[in-house]
Image (tube, rainbow, N blue to C red):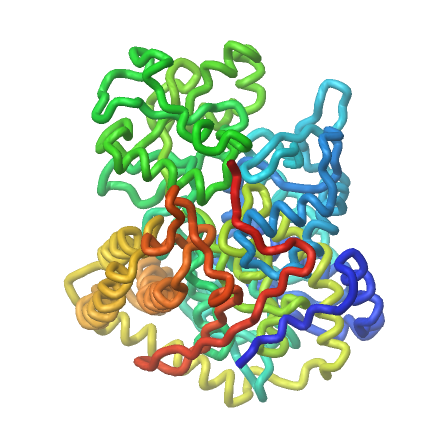
Length: 637
């Protein structure tokens, strides 16, 4: 099947405005008749629920945390992009669009990316109006800083807490609608299934995580805003609860999963210190504005950084990518770090680290200015690493961070299942094979505040509200299937915990589907994953029962989905015989080690359709056309 992104025709700058004008509307009185389920309350979910509630729809917002403010969006540190050009350094909507297409290695849909760049400026105005405390310069204007993959300063920030501050803004808007009665919050509720009636999404089944009850909720449309899936690697920068379950269960109900192999390895994380760790900690990419990345020139050099003279240091990003230097994009910076560590020039325990040095910036700006910009990040680093980064360089190393892949959506953010909309990191639409730093927050808020209110109305205008109740056979069947899975997990009574299986799976994925991938490695992991999955269903031990709070049961269900999704991810990586962005196949690289794309064979979105347990999924393609940013070798030199 050739997938249709349903992009409007005409010039990019006019496309979104004309599309909004042509879409059907729902009048205010009729909006009150419709019910929308929003799953997830991070930036995409909270902004969508608040905006839809403000418009008059009845919204049910579901999240597995105890508060909507605890969504993983709070962990975003560095900032949010917008094309306002406040520094007057040459930025524009067209440049943001170009940087995003190029940053994604020409594997994103032009129409979606241009729309994202267009609405970026409105997001900043919205957040300022909500009271988000963006950093300001001496004159009181909003400040900007640079991020990887750009030569302009377009990133708005609130020290190193941008995600948290933006989520508080969205949460305030959400709380207003809760008080107004248009939004109902459902905390501690985990989505276990999508309910399809006559080919359309009509509700979800959730587990009440406190009392264990399975509950059905009908809806005239469902918005999945459930984030990414890089916890498939076990160790990642994601919150430990982040998972693929909601998206994967929708995939098993017929939603296409697009480009699952596109995962981002962030170059600026605190290195792994041992098997005791359950997650990794991100150090914001913003630090690379003022920190210089280097390693010793001499292999195996174990001297302290202060003992290594300047002429014996290799500032390898500045050497290899002089035009962008330490702000080279994440995928390129991550591979460069791995390369020098593979050459036995890494630092710290195990030689899996590089230095991020602020000495030059402290000398140039003064320690107070550096502390003003990054103080909370330096404090966090010292608490974790027990090292003072004002006095000695930070040690960093790449780690799994973001998922560019996700459920396939068209221009309206609707999946191939009518009535199922997917927002933020849970969809695939905007970042191609590599996300530029500070663009995740931009996409999440763009989808929630500015896109879904228009596009979901276009769908609902042709849908009769409230036609299905929870007594429908599909809802009954959904509950029975979920109950069956839960009881099966509890009855195995094996000898290994879900966490042990997750850790083993993560090790396999990091080794073979991480920064470097090969035909041999992917073939081997595709053989091993089914074996591990079979062992899981024979030997996992889940203590406790189903009728109460049971975190081991929650974890086991998520690991079960990871054990299936990992195979899909590796299959996608094996089929894509090229290197692009975060997907690096060692067989396909330029003589200088850079990624080698194959535009003739792979210039498309890969959408996978579930065909049943034990059956290979079917591949569908959406061809990508580049009429405004011509295909070119991606170079940051």
